[in-house]
Length: 233
Image 1 (cartoon, rainbow, N blue to C red):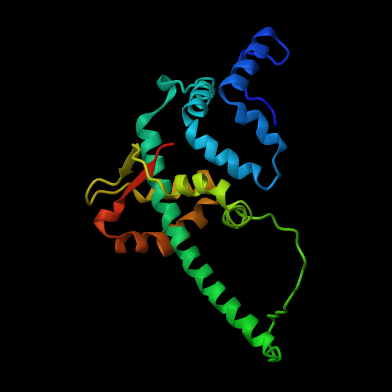
Image 2 (cartoon, rainbow, N blue to C red):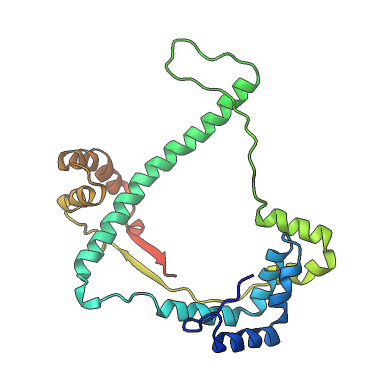
């Protein structure tokens, strides 16, 4: 396992050696987990992460400071806000149609599987076809499967982890809320231009999509659905 070090402390340097010694003294578990079974190690790390979260959060804050900052003076607030609102309304409307179609597809796919499995022949005089395929694939164990295995094989060692996972804690959540004011709306040509700019769709096709599909759905939307709440991470 690689030692996590703060930016500016290079591996091999005197400062790095001191940092490594300090971690060994304060967190001996961090260097002993390497001897554990590979299936147990991730679960043990999860447990100790919760008990040492403040150190990991400190490292994350240092890394966040190194991210490129946004030049606020170059941002056009109105352009960004209106485009975000337009993209939200257009995207969610289009996605709602896609979700409905995909839901019906999954339902029909399950029925197709049952029909084929029962021995029903494919229908004639159709360009559509279907078949059942069986393939062997290598899959990784998910978190739940790994946790169940850990509890079964190491019941005593798993108790602190299981107890920690049952705990709850309060946390603050920041969000930005944006959308249409009351019954007002952006101009139709603005939505069409967003489709052209973002999706690279020709203007005449964007107009057909907007007036034929999207705008009628806008008119069916309730007023309270005009605002979107997006959690900031």
